[in-house]
Image (cartoon, rainbow, N blue to C red; front, side, top):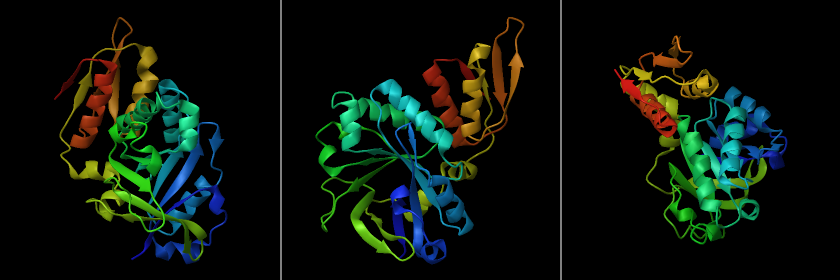
Amino acid sequence: MRHIVDISKWNGNINWDVAAPQLDLAICRVQYGSNKIDEWYQRYVAKLEQHGVPHAAYAYGCYISVNDAIVEADDFMARTSPNAKFLVLDVEDDTLQSCGENNLAKASQAFIDRCKSRGWKVGLYVSHHMYNKYGLNGVKADFLWIPRYGGNKPSYPCDIWQYTETGNVPGIGKCDLNSLIGNKSLSWFTESATQESAQASTQNIIQSGAFSPYETPDVMGALTSLKMTANFFLKPNGETYFISEPTSDAQLKAMKEYLDRKDWWYEVK
């Protein structure tokens, strides 16, 4: 069996010719909050793709409020390769310190929901000692990833177990190693949300209600993140609406959720 690793700048220069054949999946850090970009992320992704290793992306949360969590999520998505298989929000002690225990769960949910609204598959990584204590057991995500070392599995049902921070993979050296312990297969993780969408029906068309032209960039961003195409129309009163090209069930569902959050009328044809 090959390895599932998570890596960041702390892993430094990796010998990918040696490491890549030993990897099933690499989860790469993109940022530590909005203001600290992991300078190795793009280099890691380029090498992983060169060697055909599936990769995903994670962001260490440093937000101070619900609104700030949404900003961090937007920055995270803007910096993440579109070829990433999924996203992960990393919630640890520094997240607690910056956000405070009263808002931690709510802000973390806002971060995850923001990413999901753009069509991503999103997981939650949370420190074992924090999961129950701060209400994070109520946060809804597509999967749960918990670290616990010393041979002890997590006390809570989860999908990925980070079982050591002192593993060793030739070509990488010391690194975090993970195991799948839930009911989700490796292919569930390595098949992106857009690949899942491609397997679904592609006969759906959605027409939005009219909205202010100032909202157009946000709408276009949502469509782009979902890999949807649409035609925009300008009404005589200056308002705008769009009609999508035929799209998949999963893309349609994500766009409907986006429009519902906007509280806008729409019609599926």
